[in-house]
Image (cartoon, rainbow, N blue to C red; front, side, top):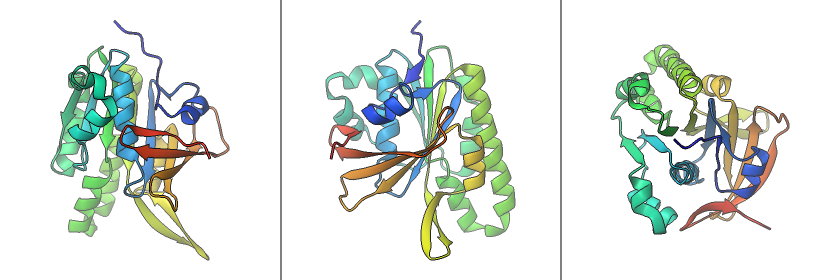
Length: 233
């Protein structure tokens, strides 16, 4: 059996900051606006996990997973990589809860990664339908994050979750934060914010939180057909 210690992102600077990549037994959050490379980054992590001989359970809650994109990133070993990825697509927030509750039944020793992309998409859709259920839905989202944290620790895997953002007005300027900020930031051991730049192919990644580093660290990434990589200015 392959012994997995870290799952690299494939972005040199981020992997250096994270001492080789995302750590086992931790929950990591990647959040940002649309088209900032969140899905590409977690897909790339799934590819790197597979290349180390471990499986990924990829929960596509936003309908953004693309086999074509996976092929672009893998090219030479698409068949081998795809066989080590299990894709699940919940249709609503309740189905997402069922998937998360049953993770321990799906995951075996051959798994190294669970991806939830996008964790807050179905949650947000349900709030839009009935805002009076906001407290109840926040409590359920908190419970799901607690389950993910428990699974990460007990199964010794990496859990990666992505999130959409909301705009918050802060005196004279506007900032973006992940949906359900307090819940997600409480449970996440590592947090990376993906910010757009004037160039749509260049993204600014900010490591806001990690187990070892307190000060935010920034690097620029380039998105192209082969994935997302460090951008050298």
